[in-house]
Each structure stands twice: as C-alpha cells, then as structure tokens.
Image 1: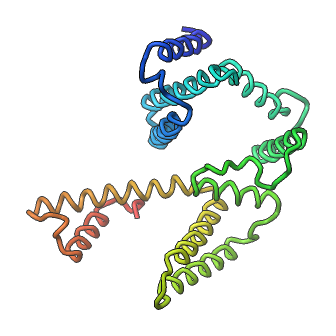
Image 2: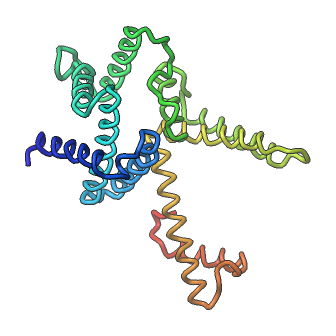
Image 3: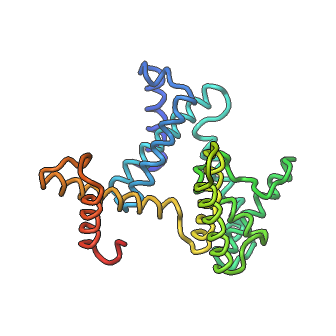
Length: 267
C-alpha cells in the first residue's frame, strides 16, 4: 500500500468508527487527552529500548490518536487530517531555508539558532507579545520544561561560564535544603518543597550543560533500582522471608550483594 493510500485508509477507518462504534462516537477531545499522553510515553519507552518492532506498533497507536483528534477538529469545522498535514509541511519548509532556500548554516547549532529566530519573527508577524520563553509549552513535564527554559536562557547569554560555578550553586542549594529540612518546629512542607525544586532545577542545569537528558537519566536509575530491589525481594523469598518483615540491615546486605554482582558500569 502506498503512503498516501495508507493515510487515506486510516482516515476512512476513523470515519467509520466515529459513525458506527458507540465508544468511539462518544469520545471528546478532553477524553482523548489521557490516551494521547499514554501513547506518547509508550513510544518513548520503546524508543529508549531501541525496540524497533514495538516502536512501529506504538507509533501506529500514537498516529491513531492524531487521526482521531483531526476527525474531532473536522466535526467542529476547525481543521481535518489533510489540513494538519499541509500545515506542518509548510511550517517545516519555512523553518528550513538552508534546505529549501538560500540561507546558509554551519552546523546543527546554527540550525537551532536560525529556528528560534524564525519562530520569533513569526510571533511578531502574528502580533503576539514577545517573551524569551515563547514556544515552551506550559504543560511540558517538569524536567523537560526546566531543560527548555534554561536552554533558552543560555541562548540569550544567561548561563554559568564554568562547570565549577554550577557545582558551587549545587552545593549552595543542598545546604539550603538541609537547613530547611532540619529546622526545628513549624510546618515546613511548602518550604522544603521549594528547596527540593531549586535543587532539582540546578541538577537539570548540570545535565543540560553536559548534553544529558535528565528524564532519560532518571528513568535509567528507576530501572536500575527496580531491577535491584526485585532481586533483593527474590533472594529474601528464597531464604524463606517476606521482604516486608525482613530487617532493614538484612535488606541492605542483600542490596549490596546484588550491587556487587553487577558489572562495574552499573554503579
């Protein structure tokens, strides 16, 4: 099946489901928001594991949500799948003048700077008030939003000059967090939360400066913790113990045992 035929078949399928399936017929854009987010995370999971066969399926699930939302837009007279495709096509052509025009850029960083400048001009043309953070969606996950905000600020010259300066800031935030956490008396939940936020924000800055995706880094640590603790629970059970009632000292011993058996790179 040709690409255009495949897209047309999917749009036709959505048309029929919307007309004939009671569940599909009752869905609203708000109903689909959760499914859309779930499919995005499943795509990211397959991508992180480089499971290309599963990625194909997850991309299909995500595409179906896009086709579904385009159908809802069509019913409201706002847009349809074709107009969505045409709009992104035209945007990409306009945002790549070094490919489709006469502009010249030296490298990927030059493309990124050009991209942001073109977006700024588009916003000015539309009469939208400028902001250094235009184009950073408020609904982004917190870690990704922190990366985008600090990257944008760095592009404008607001960044540390040396990693040593960032580490000083990190030590400062850790000290403030400890002071708030250990302060005597009073309800400190909001202040502790604020200090945790400052600490995480600084760590994200360290990651950004070294080209590390903090979300991927944390997911890797999550996976490592899960793998290790599942093995701790398995060993406790093999010894006739319930992990819930196993003394902490014994759990620590099992944890260190599991950790010591892993390869040196899995610290």
